[in-house]
Amino acid sequence: MKKILNLSNVKKLSKEEQKSISGAGTSISCCGRNKCRISYPGGSFCEPGRCLTWGGCILY
Image (cartoon, rainbow, N blue to C red):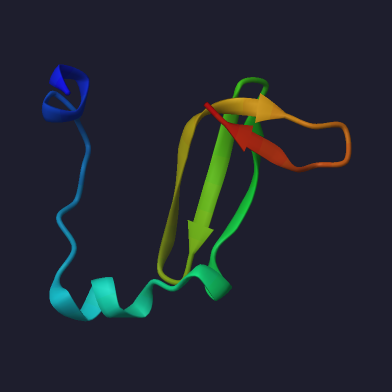
């Protein structure tokens, strides 16, 4: 929980931005050796994970 509270570069989404995010428009791919890129309409971000050989990614 402490790590979550100390995050940096986090943008608080407005109600309109929150409504634009849906599971159907979300994709996960690699953005580094040990990072997964989570893309959604309006942006993307990277989280720790493991890249798979076929281009997918597993989040930790």
